[in-house]
Length: 190
Image 1: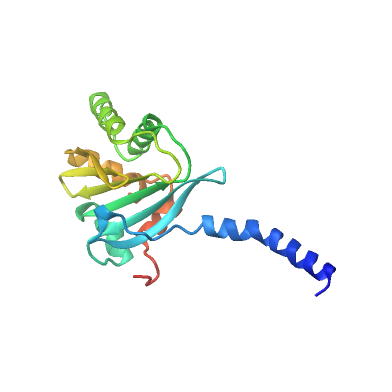
Image 2 (image 1 turned 45 degrees about the vertical axis):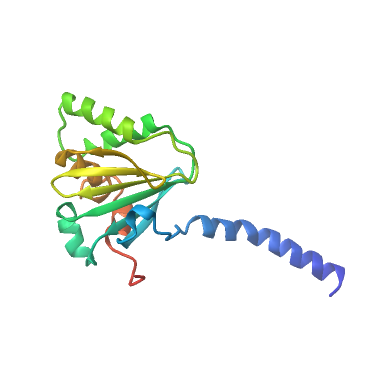
């Protein structure tokens, strides 16, 4: 191999590196968090804003579901959502944005909104790249929030739980493509 071949090969490697890194960044990991050890990975996707990766998200279920069944019954089943953040974000801003998205599904009184915002601000710390927040939906009961595997907060309010998980799972979700990736499953990758 002469010098020109080495340079060509080196340049090719350098040019392909960003594509390889981009492909790697677009593939969420499937590492099972400790709080979800007996759960099944149902679906996964990514939240992007103007092309920037905000977080990877995974939907976990206790039982195996067909997409149509889960689409119509997600709120009556124990489900968990795991968000792994790709950048630093304010916990207060996460809570505010969550409330905006919850209001897309139903009317929320000002008293409820104030209470739920306070609860979410206590549940969501400021996050940095690599931090994980998992929420476990107990139907008609509550939501448990875990931050990096540790229980952070339980919100014992069935309406809150339904509307919070509805941000991603309800037909009124502002992210229908992401909803489909979560609910439609992993193409037999279990």
